Image (cartoon, rainbow, N blue to C red):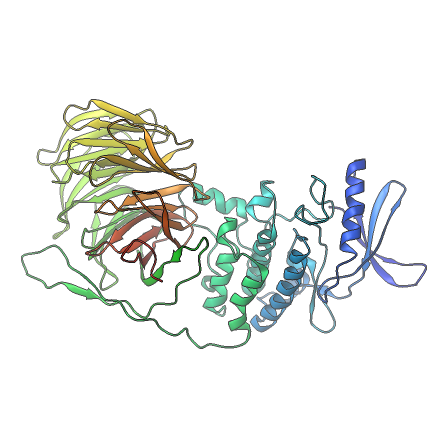
Length: 597
């Protein structure tokens, strides 16, 4: 990095900025000179001009235009409140234009922050202290930039972890900078955010409009995308980021033109009162977002929100999609009307957080597992607790019903899996897995069960007697999710190694591997017809695939902290994803599995 000084050019009498480079090796000194020559050719109104470079008594210096004025960090501190939105957006437009210019020249700044944005007498901003990317066409070396190294709090995860930077790294840092200028709050750094998500917690970085109601929602959405932990989830270019902010910076508040409405008819399981089914008529849907690789994007439907839990740990939907169930750290289970978008019942009984839940195929029974080491069986229509199963000696992390709801499988944090007879509330037998269990399931014919988790494998065994058939291997990190395909012939798994995999039940061998995710795959699901597989990463990306060919059909870009995915509706053409903060996204998959064009 090095220090920056105000100095005087004794030959011309001009004030200049003198930057001392921290160089300790001869090869780095040559790289510094190369960078200086490249930077001296840059010309943009929002960038200082590099005038010269020299070495003196073993130290190397870069000479730049001196920019007088207050930097935005000083302005923010002096103001003691967020800066004016109109000013911030005008500055953002200017800096993004400068970044588009820099990136076009192969230069990546690497250290964007309020302290490096200087406010001039004309109230414009100048971006100071830039370096150069290894991606420059003039670059032939292999070392990192001498001139700029980033600042914790503003740098993206890949820079903090020394994974290499590119243009999108600058967009992250600028997104954090704009967030701070607009809200007065510096969000948690990228390392803290990643740690929270890996632990299954919500992204601690709240949207800007949740901090300040003055921030327009379109701006808040743009900042969410710019500051995504995964590079592929950010804007592809500075110009894209600039375009996303322009409607607000121009003062336009015209809403997007609505698309056609789609009516989805879903119904509750039949009950004694003979209540009619309810039509869920989504509001006008925004145009589909662009996605890469020619895939079609998802058309969004009105979202749900599982409110009241604090942190949501588990959720499920009835088979017809009319009823939703959620559980969380508050120890409660809530039942939701999807049509009304509100809770209709609350089930209390667990002593501590509820970690897992499952709904029976007919929608009449609910099973839950919690930190109190119990499994509980509930009657959905009355909310009455029917059975309490207490043979686990550790928090229960996963539960599943057999298709006819006569058996329940549960798994706990010590690796113990138990198969229960639901009618008698007796444990039939137990299986000891080599690590904590996070996923269990029962095959559609009720003959097989599975359990997977921290051991990075999935055990498949017979319900009758508990004989193990296969141990499914391949994941390099924890298995977060595992489900049987509807025909029982394969198992789909998702893991911390950012892959989803399909394994043959008869041989235990891996058939297909899906590797396009860039963060841990927290959930997988298979549509009832077996044609489509959904996989969702903790970074909020849901992808759906053709189960027969492995071809990716589409993707949905959602919120960080994803915990579960699935499909709803009579034709299962509606995908859903829920996150640990209680957000539930719904979108159309399309009739052939792709997104709606």
